[in-house]
Length: 212
Image 1 (cartoon, helix red, strand yellow):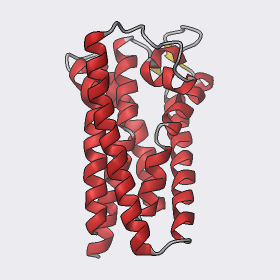
Image 2: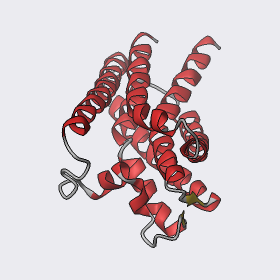
Image 3: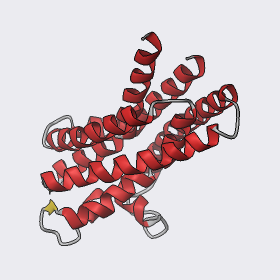
């Protein structure tokens, strides 16, 4: 029973950290007054959940090749590394934004990264809301951004069905919450530190799983 509670906590922590990107995107849309239709939000949740399932399945296949102890240690180390990378990337971007204008390197980044950095470009028809078709590109960008953490989390032994279900729920919730925050005075604070918070949670999860 105690072990099940620990794995449940790990699944919830992972699902929340992997959906902080959704929170950031929601905030960006809230600031731009761009609405996300409920059907689009559900579609995004379905696609990101499928991506989580596939990445975690890959991680589970890896554990069939190596021992459980080695797999758990490896997955934990990868999670910590990914979390630290998020934190250092946040610091690097803060320094870059301090020293450079916002239009630098815009032509060099990949398509999905452009969407992550400027979510409003997913609204290709400039209608002021994200329809089902536009939601697909946004969902793929969010999914690609979390593939590595899904593999690593699965290697540590985190329950796949619970994590996928939690990912679906948190995906819908964080996008909605982000839109509300984007219309409030807290938008800059939440949007600015979202990646940093995500990195910290992933590091905590990696360390936690190392000793479970």
